[in-house]
Length: 598
Image (cartoon, rainbow, N blue to C red; front, side):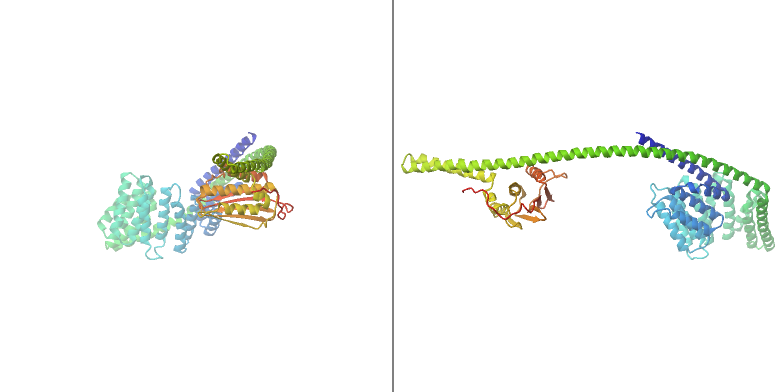
């Protein structure tokens, strides 16, 4: 119970750290979106020592983004590849795909080889296409990224516009109502490609759709760029009247500072229109105005950057932000110190509780094992005693049947013969004589089954050989091989192996449907093994090797003699092996033991 509570506390502590890191990364993400890369980088460096492997991936990802936007491609690539090295080869996560995207962007912006850029995007796409579940928005973005890659190499590589159009179309087919921004992006890019390829009608058609969509939804921020693109389409296609009409509609925008970003494009389109209308003087004036506008725009941007850099207010704001960051860092370290101290205490307490629990389990296991061993030894002694008693009982019964009952029956037969010679009711005497012969035969057979006379007289090897010859018939050939050389061993082992062999062969005769069987008696390294094979239908047994009663008893007796029984059957014959230990003193040249008369 204590150990479980400790684990819960540790998990709570880890969850706290994860949430704290997540909040910091959300802050860093916000900073990168507003292009505040200096503050984002400072925050990243301060939290780096406290990050785990997963958070390090985010660290290198945000570092890569910062260096890309700061136009430092070498540092960006260094960070991206360090982050990528944290992933395993079989990791197919979205974070890994984003690293490939950033690396491809860096190479594309630096005009690297197109094949290299495409191979990186393909690796990212492969991951995105195999995400579970598939995120359609992410997949659309991947196709647009590949199309943009082709589009950026139009001036350097031939016939890439068609490839770009293919992937824009592929992305557009996946778009639904919730992918409005991505759909407009695809259509706008396709219109620009058609315009560059001279397919002015296609470009105009798409631009008119974009314009209609913007007006329908009253999206002024999309309507203005659509009108600007429409002017360019009309100028390129030579539809000068429509171009002039659209340009007139856009003229007020030239005076609105909110739309100054499109002023340069409008001035350029106006100069091209005047040139096509052969109003060269106006075309020249508009072109001069366009160039002067560009120069003034660059000067304003430069001046604004210089003023911003020199601004005392900007410096003061930086100092305030830095002070807040330092304060937050101090508070974070203080919280971390107490949390780490608490976790160390909990872990120590948990380790003590775990050690006590493990010791108790180990002690219980030792006691249980000792009890089991004692129980097993007792069972084995009982089985061994039972086996020895049973064997002695068999010998006594066999001797009694053979020596006394059989002798009496033989004597009775002699008296009947004498009576027969005196012709005293010969028919009855004949019947009694036949009955006595039958009883004598049965008694002898029972005696031989209890204790084989061949086994007692000539030993195990001769007894098994005799048994094999006796049970062989035209439909079952039984062969016997041995390297035991007629040695004699403990009688209880000989009797057990002989009776086991008899049981195996009887099972083969009754159940196996076999045509071939072999018996092998092998002595090797003070172990004697009896192996019985057949080519029949096999023995049915479950995974726990629960077999028939006869085989179960044989297994118990084998274990009592410190041996083992192995049964293997796969439906195509069976393999049974009994292996028992014997000492060198046990294996001696053959010595006759008991003799029974036939």
